[in-house]
Amino acid sequence: MNVEVVSTTGYRASKLLGSDIYNDQGEKIGKLDDFIVSSEANVSVAVVGVGGFLGVGSRMVAVPANLFESNDKGQTVLPGATK
Image (cartoon, rainbow, N blue to C red):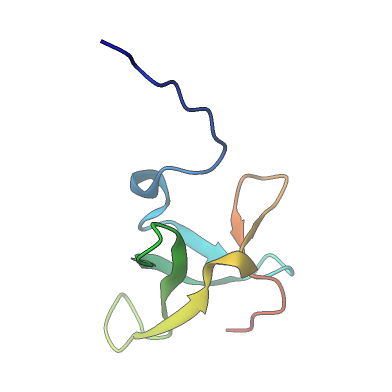
């Protein structure tokens, strides 16, 4: 039996879903609620829940996944985003 070993870098979806999203000023702007995976098996869009209070009245915003970054605190950052 041949087994192909694949090495890659990235993040596990289970660790990212529900995580807080920050802007580059360190302000929390929402939570990562979902991902949309393209037919090429790439994550193309991240769905961020923004606004509301205690989860009530929030709205979903689709953001191209390639816009997200990670900072030195290990936080998921969306540069230029505002509350």
